[in-house]
Amino acid sequence: MDHVITKAQPCRRSADLSLCAVDGDVVILDRMRGYVHQLNATASHIWSACDGRHSVDEIAASLGASFTDPPQDLRDAVIRTLSEFEKLGLLVSPSLPDDTASEETS
Image (cartoon, rainbow, N blue to C red; front, top):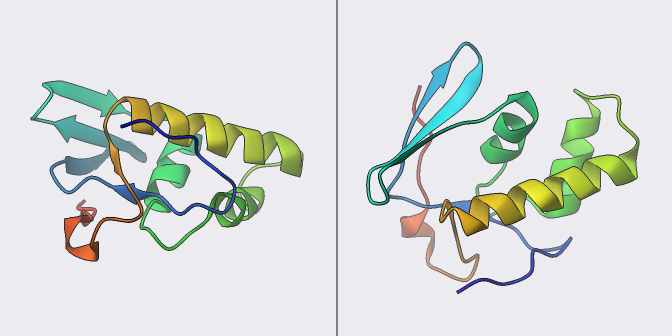
């Protein structure tokens, strides 16, 4: 079920994904769907904050420490990236119990 990503909504990674880092970027193996996703630096930063505790605004603010884009551009990039993650089935609803969130591995 798709829903609109909002500024206040925390997002969480799906538990059925395998993760690793390659040359500083996050690589996600989605065995259920048969896909491998390699994230760039911005998407990797956003992904690392998808723990169910950080809102879109908090993720955008953390990007500001690493990237020099204007705050509104960072917020827009976070919303676009989270929406793409959701379309790819990489995120779970923030309302699901915490035990479904994945732990990032290296």
